[in-house]
Length: 245
Length: 245
Image (cartoon, each protein chain N blue to C red):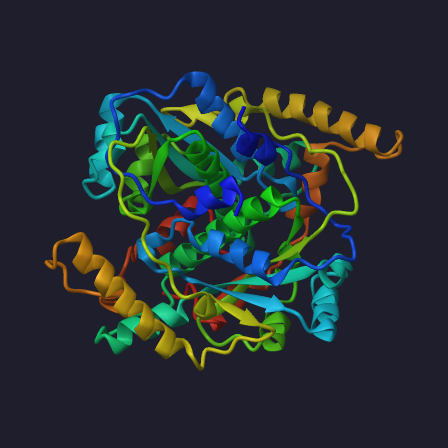
């Protein structure tokens, strides 16, 4: 196992950071490493907002559901899907452009995830810790207003970056056989594999909490489906010019 | 610049592969490294179909728009967004589950991109080359039928993996200032930055083709917007149980 793979496999989210700034040169290097990720048809459908104003950071921490590390991490980025730049470039080159296609929503959201994950890998290779903040989608309109995002740009997720001040355990993942299939989708073993994983996660939670946390993977998933998770997203995306047509 | 960042920055798509198989042990190691990527609420909303049957590979190469490397690469993966496993697990744990939320489409599509990019980084750290195949969405229903994908699972993209038999140049990316903004979205310089990038890309295309390819970034984007790119995606996703509510 080479050092890169070893580091990938030791990833865990960091939510407590040292009071130490990432040097600007390194920060830019991370973003450039991110840009090298694959991008659909070279469209590069993303804009990253580097939020440095402390008050704005506090507001984002609240909007993301009260996550204090959004304000306390060395750096905080909001990754935006951006179809504005490319559409306008194509229009200036003479295209009669179309917007609001579901395919564009997918292309931009995936482009964003690819650049972000490259930045994460680059950051962790320099000893930094990270935490993705999906909570940015809790109040996407307010986040968009705060960051002055125009039409055809939407905030996909946030990312905390900084020097770790904690060393949490690596969280187990589903058995390989559950997520990797040969030739066709066959989930006839999945119920047993999930039961096995529920046991793994139950042990993980118990050990981490001195026996206080009695739950497992399936139980932990329940709130994701029982409440209507972020039901505003469809209308929000339509309003922002994504996914209508 | 550490070796990991250096390798990230030297990424380019590989479309010609040696006739050399990836050892099974390494292959599984890559997938495990992928699984370590962050996942929204630990949901791990993905299934990877490892397509090994040569006839099925040929069919996919056709369905993806006639891309022969889909058949000729050492390994070909179809990355699927999968909300079936997690929903069924939550249901067995007693949740009254909801499906078809736009938020679930985003969570699953982003989860897929994160695991895929980790696999790509791991693969490239072992000297392998890769090529993402968005063309999987050209005929998503036929791909789903071929791979027997059930409801609440959709094919997001494919990935060719293998030992490179070509050494293409790294493709330039937009200037950092175009995609990285401080505190708020401000694109007042974007038109000039895009013009600068159009020049960069015009030079890149000319040099690569001995002066034969006379185009730039903005020109290359035009077909993405002028034709209705994959207009079937909205209906397809709705039919598969994604993005209705």
